Image (tube, rainbow, N blue to C red; front, side):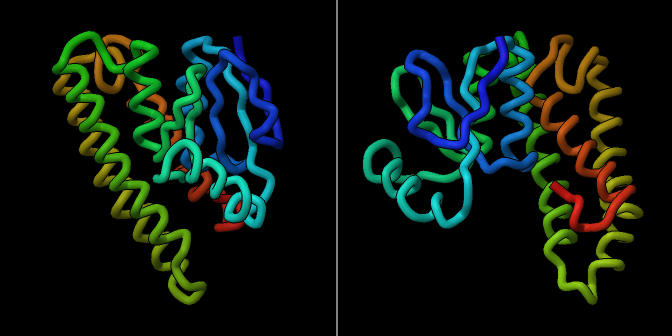
Length: 196
């Protein structure tokens, strides 16, 4: 159970899942949490730098495995490469029984994930705002965006009467919610250099 972190995509273990992403929190956090929670053995390959990724590594994956290559990506034990953060997360959800027990649960999972993607977009607008706009964008994020999105999610969860965010079992929506809450906590307590 667990993972082995590696700095090189060529060190993948045969027969295991491999999650490849930058050595930071970002869009790889929720898939990592889901894999750890599921007890899945996986290699956590950390890409060592933009120059390396945008050079040889992405070209090799794109040419050989998946023309849509992007980080994060998941390599299955069969050698398939799944790209795009939400596709990776949803694949893990489906294969590790983290999508709820019913089609209604699955729809609730998707709805929570989608509204959290909207909130993450607001986070990125703030994070990448010009220095002259950062303070006002941060204030807006904390005073307008977070209360609106978290309030809507709270009402959704309360109305659904579920034990967890989307269902009575843990789902991938819970990991996306935890990830987004961690990002929000960084905004409350830090400057943009600490956002991950």
